[in-house]
Image (cartoon, rainbow, N blue to C red; front, side):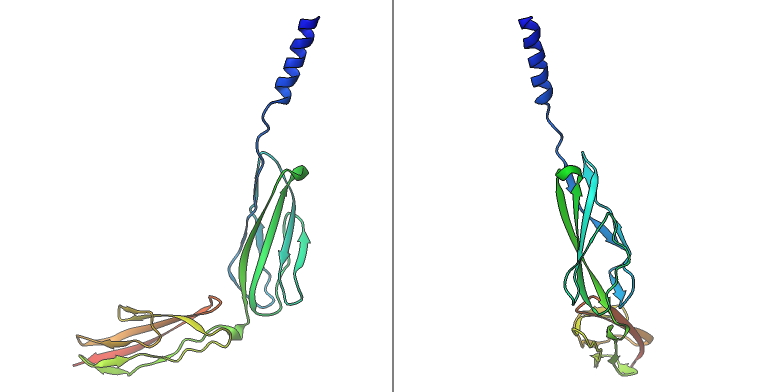
Length: 198
């Protein structure tokens, strides 16, 4: 009888000492795009995963001028922002029975149609081979200003605001494209044509 009792105790101890697999929560979500218009609905898909457990609960936080808003549920639907700005959305995902949690944040840019940058520049309609040609930026952005310039001048690349180029051969109808990006990542582009003559 003692041997049987000892064997039962050993079996119970072996079962109770069995290692429980670790719970790993990885919070994440995607948005259907990164830049939205004022009032446009932000489509969010919860892509959180839980290893060795079940996703049981989610808390969402998103900022606005009236303070941080909170929502609860596996999905977050129907949010939009009434004013332009850079907004942070945070998801905290919880495993069942408090077995673990994780948080993930991402930002979305909300712009007013009138707040996107407007790309513009001046240059001569014709330029001579061997002479300096100034491509002068006149782009405008009302909120945050222009932060980057990307020029493609007949295949010549530049990232300064107003480059000076010397052409080495004549060419007709050379396309000049300027792409500008503002502080929030919104961009605009414009293309003009220049002829290079002898």
